Amino acid sequence: MRKNDSFYRHLLQECQSDDLQRRLRALDGLGKDEYLDLVEGQFLLDRLNSTSDVQEQMAIERLMCQVKEPLPIDALMAILEDWETSPVFLRMQVAHVLAVRSAEEALDLFLRIILDPEEHPWLRETLTGDLAIWGERISDELLLTLLADPEPAVCTAALEVLRERPSSTIPLGAILPYCAHEKKYVREAAIKTLMAAEQRVPIDPILSALHDPEPEVRAAASHACMSLVEWFPDQIPLDLLLQSLHDEYAAVREDVLDAFGKIPLRIPVEPVIAALTDPVSYVRCAAVETLGLMGERVPLSAYPMLQKMAGFDDSAHVRQRATRTLLLLHGMTPAPLTLPIIDIGG
Image 1: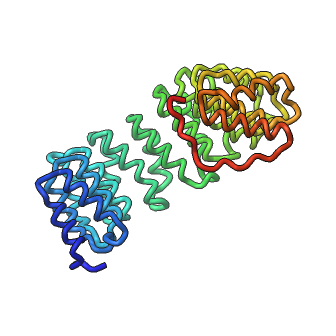
Image 2 (image 1 turned 45 degrees about the vertical axis):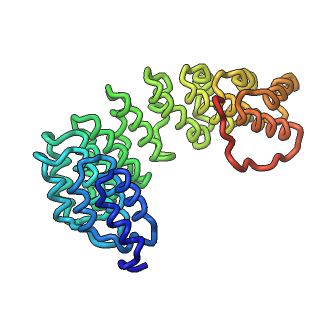
């Protein structure tokens, strides 16, 4: 593809149309593989400077992350540094472009903004999250400093970056206090980051979080239990997981049933059968699939309910999985699941 290609030149002209929708369609067209090595960085910067529409800015910045031509890094850094006239959302998007393009000359500016408590917290959060892109260029000391930042959003972003570190290097002792942070999203992030340490993870903080007052935190803990029962099969108290089968948050109930599916020979059958009547379809799916893994332990009294679900459940997903489980329980091998089923109101 060459720059004098007629359709490519048409797209460039459309990007300068007075009509926003035409400009958006043209920007989308320039994102095709055959044009990414043609679009010039200065053209995109000119388009960025000519619009205040957020949707269009995002489309331009996506292209900036993809194009092969060099970008005007100095001009983008000027936008990022301009806290007086550049909107914070624009600065956030430009910062992400600089990170994705590994603009080494922008790293000092990145760090200066991140560490400036007077800067907008949204911007500091975005820049902190993008530190993962810089990899080993970012020291553990800096991440620990950001972890202790009084702004919870920055702290959460630092936890997410630590999650991307090699599992053997994640500083568990520094993360543990954040499992008790006053902000629920910090507690949730702390649990997920602890789990990134894999078999180094301390079990007790995860299990304690199953009783957290916030459902999102409990869901992070219950999701973690799917790995914990595999890594530490003899150390996870089943009574605690059985209690979580009655959690008001459906995602927790689903996760616990999925965790039971990892240890089908150790769990009682009755609570799983009881979950077949759960009001939420994806919880019923999890119960059905776990029963399929329990084999001969499933009593014959459960078969009529599975047969009814296979034929009449409101959810197509449940009907399909109930049919598969019945085949498994009768010693047959069902065909693998293929195309997803779309539930209408299931």
